[in-house]
Length: 314
Picture 1 (cartoon, one colour):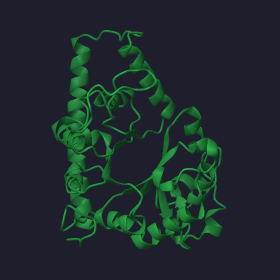
Picture 2: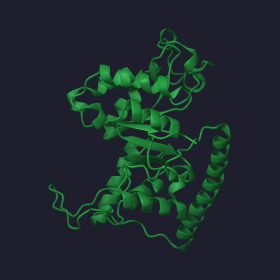
Picture 3: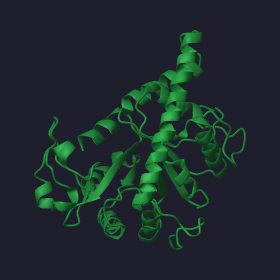
């Protein structure tokens, strides 16, 4: 919880967190299915009940306890935090019916000044979880989480489905094509995990593209009377929100002429170009391998009808 409180304290607009299910059906917030890395215990979350899990403390200072989804929502339910929105990364290590059913019960038990379905996006990694989320929580916005554009392309025809994609998968020509389709269909797009200033700035630059489909040119912002258009990237997920906001501020100052970026010579531009190409190449290799392994494991399932989440799976 300290990490969430710190992020909001420095100005983050949203929180992203991962959810797992304990042995006795409690929804807990943990990135890993195992407790080893963060809590020093060689056990899985799914094998432990809440009475045991609540006694654990993180290995690193300040030795925080393992939070539940209840704890997060009770904190966010305070009126001063009602503008903070949440992305739930729903891991596929648990049974979708059990995990999403438990999430549904928690959401119904805790009230918010602003309804949770206006503040929470459910992020799912495959078709089975997306279908279950749409059925059990039909009013909540959904996003497909992926590092594979090849897999995400399968879900593009589905209406009212956003995307939460690995940032480096979006660079290069394949990423440009996917971004163009997102722009054309006006879908929610978030990207993770962006911790380097160069890639933070890359995300900012994507929102200087042409307005999305249906945006009326010349729409003006009420506060500064400037021409605005909906962002292409709606959310940037980072481990360092303070740094990201600093990058945003520097970039805005440059656009306003309040700051001059130091000139780089040919070597600087060539180095950046080579680094980008290397990043693109290595990302494609890793992602293709990831896609093949996940498909072989049965983790990447497909819809028979790509236009709806209501039909059967292949």
